[in-house]
Image (cartoon, rainbow, N blue to C red; front, side):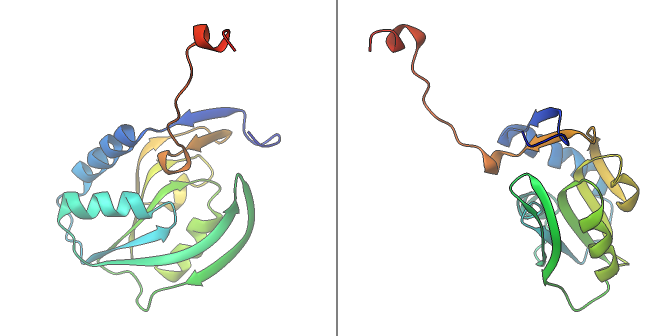
Length: 159
């Protein structure tokens, strides 16, 4: 983990992410949703899962770059949308410090903003989230991990 900012780690598996998104969808099922705007890149997979669970066919993206590996960098809006978000669901995987959330709120002030995970600093900027995570916790998402064979200890000693 990087520097002094992160002191904990939370590993999210594909199964856990899917369960969490389905639980979030239970809270959204009664909403009338025109479409989904996913915040790239972290919001893409949760948005796809939400679209499936709620049968939403219209999906767009807002492309914002704010992280370089585990470090927050400058905020760059690479692609916006041409509406104010009324009737739309805005989706991201995580709200952390709120820098990205503030920028997206400016672009889509009328969207209903949801994240799967929320940290204390960013939590007030979203309309709904499922799970609160400590501010000093790095979340390891499944798309950032790979499965690898680990040789049994007994075999390692034979080399």
